Length: 330
Image (cartoon, rainbow, N blue to C red; front, side, top):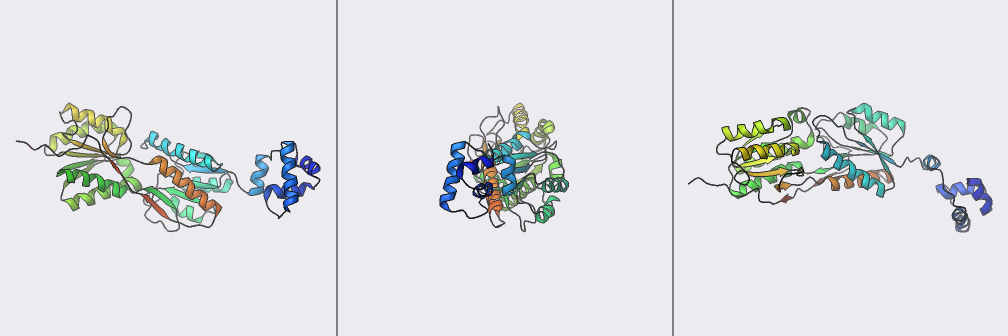
């Protein structure tokens, strides 16, 4: 079925049918209704490519999520699924870009006209992609917050507040000697925003509360060794904050080997719990909400005038039996 068949059936010109479909010209209600009735009667379906050309839309969004060695893939995929699900509600598909191409990847996608907009993850504090995003004629949203947010639309968990909330929770219980187990060292070396902000919030709250606090980057392969060192070198340590999901299980196993199961050593997790780990007091990572918010903000930028903004979701502590007041020796 072709557009000329619809035109013949409705008694109008093919260009009139095109204008009814594209909305580029005003058509009388009577003629428009006749064309739409013919479309229904004939079962005509406009070609997807023709629709894209007519609207200058691809109905595709790009999600840039570099899968580096130190990226926890299950968390990255939670974000990807949430973005795909939200995009489908807006009749868009998602092109997933997993290579760490930096600015070159953004130029490539923008130059190809493959997508209507782009969502960028794994945002660094001084991200080389930010000037490119400002220069491109391509709507964008960052899941993450760089140091300079001028003319950018960003959404993220308030990681600084999350790090602080974990300290305040332990301090309120009476803990005065705590440690922070963070991301792998490489994540801090490239100044990944969420990791830096969490650590900054932890350190500021520890100073505010007068708590002895140390921080330790951690590769999951070294988690058991780190736990043993903390038990050996910090006999007065009573609280542990873990911002490293794949390290949680080996850390807890190693603590148990030394007779320090929670809540004897109180443990707060920042992020989702991996399979097999018992319930812990934690600040949940709202990946699904962040993905949906990012898509909604991007569709707003695609459909209307730009209103750059930074949206930070408030962290919420979920309590469990892994935290309690410290046990005082007799």
